Length: 294
Image (cartoon, rainbow, N blue to C red; front, top):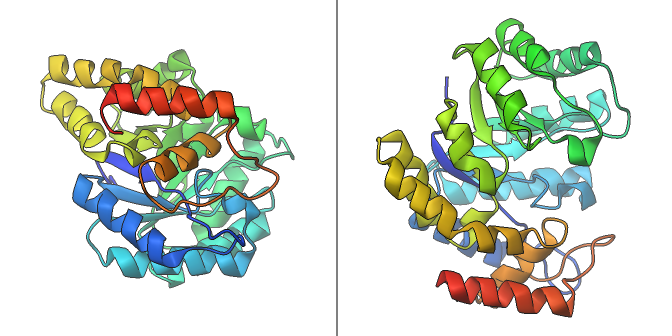
C-alpha cells in the first residue's frame, strides 16, 4: 500500500530573480536531498509554491522533477485544487509525465461538506491510476477531513492509500488510526509531531525540516520504526528549535531563506509572499548554527 516509508521532502521550487524557475538549482537540490537520505520527493506542494504557478508551469516542474529523480525515489506531485475539474486535470497530467503518486489537498475556500470531500477524492481517483495521498491541513484550507470520512474514502475509493495529517490535532489522528485499523497510511505533515504520529502507526513524514537535515529526519523515522525510540526521541527533540525557526513566518518563506543561507540559490518567494523579516533572519540563522548545519 505505502508509496514510501520514512522522510519525504516537501521540496521548494527555486526561482531566479526574475521569478522564473531555476531548473539548474532545482536539480542540484533534488540530487542533494536524495543523496542526503530523503525517501521521496513531494513536488509542487505548498512548500513548492504551486499556488503561484499556472497549469503548464506546474506540470513542467513535475516533469523536470520526475526526469531528474530518474526512479531513485518516488515522486509525489501536488495536484489538489478548490475546483474538482482543475484537480482532475492536474492529476491526469501529473500521471502522464510520470509522477508515482499524488498529494491532493482538500478544496480550499469552498469549505465543502464531508460528502463533498468524498465526491472530490472519488472523482480524482476515477480519473487516474496512481496512488493518492489526501492532505488534511485545515489551517490553510478551512476544511477538515474528519476521521470517519478519511476512513470511508480509504475503504471505498480506489487509489486513495494515505493521508498527510497537518491538522496538529493528535487526538483526531489517534481516532483516525483507531478507526482505520491499518487501511490507510498516515504521514505527519508537521515536523514537530513526527514521533507522536509514528507512535500511532504512522509511516513517516512529509517534511520541510528535511531541506536542512535530510539524513537526520530519515534516521529519526527509521530509528523509531526499528525500535530505537531513544535515538528517535533525541533527534526529534534536538530539532525543535530549528523546526520552530523554519515556521517563524508562513511556509515556505523561512525555508527558502534557510536554503539561501546554506549556499543554495533558492531565490525569492513569489508574491503575495514576502521575504523573511530581518528579525526572523537573525532567529533562523542562530537556529541553523545551533543545530550545526550552518
